[in-house]
Length: 263
Image 1 (cartoon, rainbow, N blue to C red):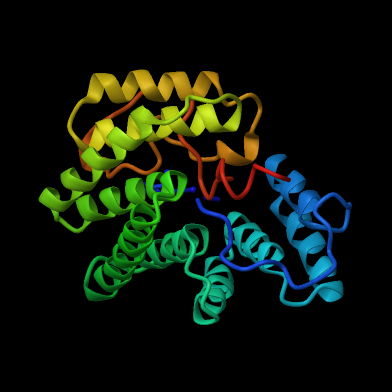
Image 2: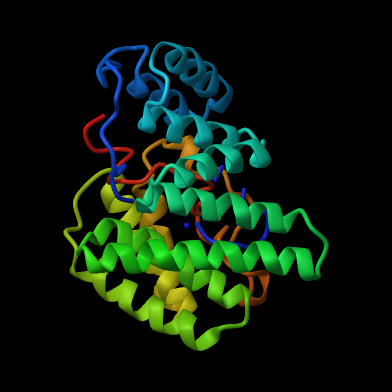
C-alpha cells in the first residue's frame, strides 16, 4: 500500500530501531508530531520545512529524518527521498519503516525509467528490500512490520512475474492481518486496505473490493493518505483490471505503528 501516487503500479511498520539521540520532544511543535500533522493534512512542503528546521536543532534524529524523507517523497522529490532513506540504512537502521520507504522510492525511481533493464533493476532492489523487511519482522514477531513490508513484497513480486512467491507472501500476510486486532481509526483503515490488497494478489476480486470500500469508509479525512487517483488500488498493476472503490489506497502513507502511535 504510498506520496505515497503509485502512478499505475506498485504497492503501498516497525518503530525505528534506535532511540533519537537529541532532546527534540515528540509533543513539542518543533518536533516530529508537528511534521506528522502537516503530512496528515496533505501538506508535504510544510512538513519538509518543519523537519529541516527541527533537524537543525536535533541533527541525527532518526524519526525526524524518516519524516523528512516521507515529506520529500510525497512532494515528488523521489531521488532526494531515496537518498535520505539510503543514508539511514547505511547507518544500520534496518526497521520495516526505513527499509519499506527505501524500497518504495526505489520502485518509484524504476517507474521513471522506460521499460527495460534499468526499470527491472530498481524493481528487483525494491522487492529485495521489502522481502528483507518482511522476513526480519516475521522473525521478531512484529506483526505490524510484517504486514506492511509483506503486502508490498507480494505486490512487487507480481510486477516481477514471481507469481508463486507473490501468492505465498500474500497468503501469509492475509492470515496475519485477519488475526490482528481490528482496532480503530488509522489502524482499522490500514487493516482493511491490507486485506483488500492481499485478496487482490490472491485473485479474490470481490473480497478485495469489499475491503477497499470498507477502508474508504474508515479514511476519516486523512487526505495525505488518500492521494492515489485512478479508481483502482494505487498499488495494483494495471493488468489486474478496472476497479471502482470509493477511494483508492494511499501513496506514501502514514503507518499505524511507528507513524501514528505515540505521536
